Amino acid sequence: MQISKVVIFGGTGAQAGPMVRALSKTKQFKVTVPTRDVNSSAAQALTELPNTTLLEATYTTEEGLRASFAGQDACYFIINSFDIREADEYFWTIRAYEIAAQSGLKLFVYSGAQNRLKDHGYDEKYRNSHNMVKGHLCDWLKNQDDKVLPFCVLYGGVYMQMLGSLLCPLKQDDIYVFAAPVHESSIIPLTPLENYGTTAAWIFQNPAKAKGRMIDAGAIPSTWPQIVDAFKKTTDKEARFLPVTQDQWFAGAVSKGIDPEAKLPRGVQQDDPATFTFRKTFGAWWNIWQDNTREYEHKIRSGEHAEPGVQGRIASLEEWMEKTEYQGEYKEPTKMRRDMATN
Image (tube, rainbow, N blue to C red; front, side):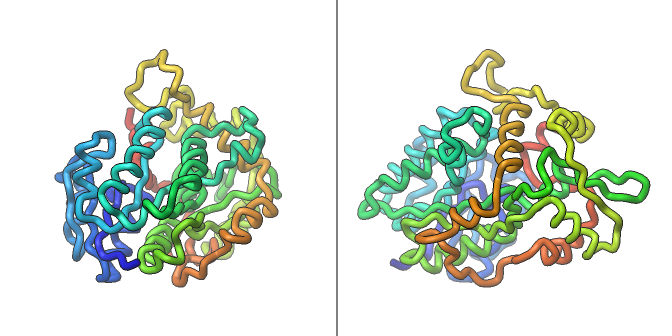
């Protein structure tokens, strides 16, 4: 199986943007990026990359999907769960797979997630809306006929760049305080966005090795004390970890321009039952990480889903902090939180 033409959905966003740049850099692929607005600054920035083409299209219409998949060998399919209702995310992901198969694609790479809700026995405490749908869809993909259209799931964890937004420390008397509603031993799989690009390039260069697998995007399972230690080591600044309650953390989110009671996706009817609030989904998100263990993170990366040996990824907190010159300052990488902070 050889792949030379790839369509990357979400290519103007935080996760898939590094993929477009990584694939362009290899000079092995012709990359197409569907976008609703080809004139946006994020879209126009991609036109400067070699072998990269913009396509005005959306994943929420059949016409947009057919135009996006036409003539392609493979795709990376991602839906922004903060922009679409749960029911619509199920429908359009399944429809995308169907149309990709009809269009003759050789590999369907899905931006997925571990089904942590299922692993927790469907306990409502862990029903993190903006990841839960992806976990269920991964289970659906595993039951499809790979003779018709092989699939691969690329999953990560928490964007490491969130250390510059929702996870950004507060400076108090020259001490950087990393506050979070977790325990000292709680594990959070931080994933540098750069690693998504490196891993995606490996997948499209090695489709036969990637197909049928859940592939980790290069997450670095970490405790909060480890984050603090890496920060102190790379910046020579004083810092500490402060365990807080969820109510205290949400109060801090308000100071960053976030309304915990805001209904998501944005623009939905307030009485729509297929919606969630920032507090509900991120409350469950924090419950997942508070109770997460290193043993679980090891288990999901073992056996058939063991690390495939991707070279060139950022491998430690310290390496990422040094490469990005991280200083514990606020820098927002994702559209959802930019939108919420400005409305």
